[in-house]
Image (cartoon, rainbow, N blue to C red):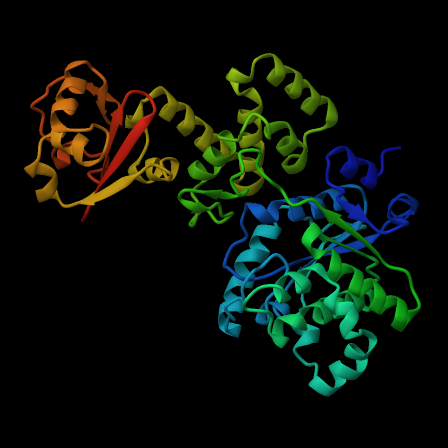
Length: 423
């Protein structure tokens, strides 16, 4: 029988684990949690691995808890950070928590009969703590030497800015979280990214010392990209799960553009496709990577999980339309979502109509000069939206704009520049 640990291992999702985790997950239902910091109104693709881990846990019959860090979010986790975080107000955190809860609900079943998921807010127990009580009941069980050995603290101490006492105390707050969900919900496993190992083991220690019980930790790898670009980042910025911050078209395009070297690993990490399906895609990808079948499946599956099948289908059709150069069926908003990484220039109607197409090609860098632009137009290498232009004297107007908002200038099949008309 395949256990959750076996599944996570095959998918390359076990970076480290405490002794006994494999046996605990095989012996019966386990309650486990992962914490999510409300530092923004939306989670981003960097959080997907943790969200998927909780969903996989539930699918294997275990009980998942998502801790929304309303309390720890007031402090900020120093793990993986080189500088102090900007502290948020309680109002900002409350607003961010609402958005995060809605996104987690897409992945977790809160009505399951035997193992319903829970979302809890650690402000419920951290908020009422008084300083003296916290120091007596939590702080006294950790030596400064123990805390200094933690990688997140050690790295910050070696930096010029150091670490404030506020962030230094974060490890104790997260340890308290583990103790609280252990007491309240029988939670015996904490999961998270590999940068959370020190915080997780601190919670295990606190449970051992105060309750005489054994708890476990399992950490997932930090996702990287073979190209060296930080995962989840593009030239346009962070890839968010909120469609208002990253459109479903841009989200789909992010996954569609996955490097050949990463796509099979990402299929294992970010989809629920089974081993047979992924291994079949791996063989097809090895034989004909230029077809990008694996990337299309990845983009479709992840988009459907985050935005729903209907939006995923729209994004897939839009991407196919864009690749074919047929812009007419897409709205300006959809095109801007897909072309989020394409350079753009905001122009007034007057500016737009003052210069001919050749001058705009030179001004946007699609041509080295107006003379070069003229030669490109004559040769049929220039497109306005999806239409090839051969009239070297053509002038642009608002009538050329899609939805009277944007004009997509193209040089060949790949180089593009967007003119955005100011209202």
